[in-house]
Amino acid sequence: MLVLVVDTSSAAVTAALCKVSDGVDVLAREQIVNARGHGENLAPLIARCVPRPADLGAIVAGVGPGPY
Image (cartoon, rainbow, N blue to C red; front, side):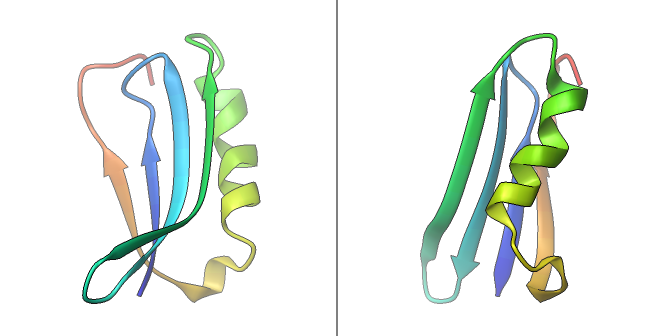
């Protein structure tokens, strides 16, 4: 299954595409460190990691105290 992983709970904005089967393989990863640009940066990072959103089986988001 392909999984989109996003985290915005720190100064970094991170998106990754992982393949989960018997283990986890990171297929793509994008990150920008910008404490004030989470809203502007997240969608382009996801677009670069996930060429075909219809293929996703799940979306995982980090939650925690953070800016966005």
